[in-house]
Figure 1: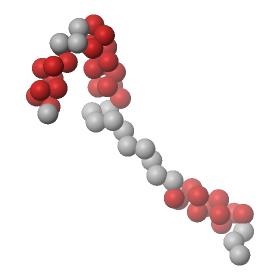
Figure 2: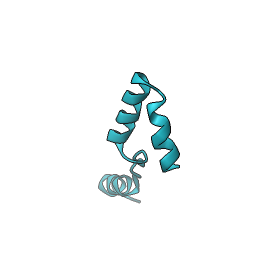
Figure 3: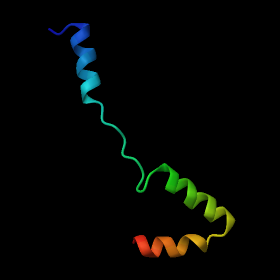
Length: 50
């Protein structure tokens, strides 16, 4: 039988970190900003990256 401390340690080690968005949060914010300003501005960048 496991103690409370052992179960807490197991929970901490099993946590999986979420994956960050491709290019990072700053790039995602930039795409969002440019999309609001003029959606065609993102087309050139997306075509180069893809």
